[in-house]
Length: 258
Image (cartoon, rainbow, N blue to C red; front, side):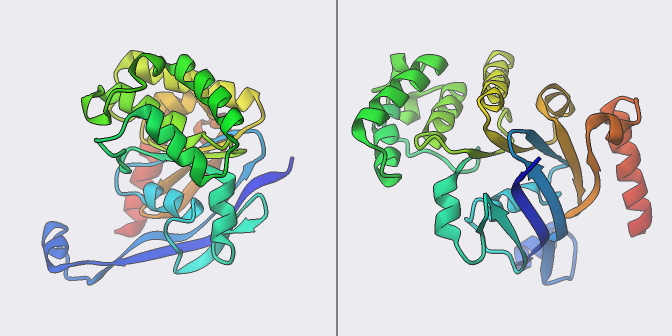
């Protein structure tokens, strides 16, 4: 099976401010968020990056969406390099993260039209796509409501719809169910599987074991910016609960670090 995403030796280091050094109780002036990370995502699968908060998952996804430039290494999205051709990557992917907030003063209807125009989506195609997505997520009843007045779940649904305005073949979601109630989370996870059934390639990050078990074809475990294990769920778990396998990996990694 062909790879839609190929990641090779990605590395990203950030400079720490005095305040950050104090919070992290370190004298180091830099922090390596992603450390020589490599993996592949096959076309038409859902691949999960599983790891604790601060593992480097979000930084990795931002590099793959061509929002952050890696210090070393490269990644290709459908053959386009995040280093040498970031504009092509941005055209190819849909990117959703809870940390990128929608502007409070605008409505879902306005935002969908705005991002459609950015992606040069024909108006007739835009309207058909908007109607389908808004009906699918129940946004149609709130299409003219300001984002500031939407519930957390409806904001997430709007963000999801907006990320798909250009019908991307590769979709990158950072913690897609984080902070959502059970019903909204189910709506999102069901939709992820619908997208896979349509041939979309999905890369998501999460620290929620049940999400990985429900939707992912394969997964990689990221700890301290490094890939410590990867494969299908049976390969990762050896028949044990995923949570148990993860904590064993985490304990082994902590032991190596010490």
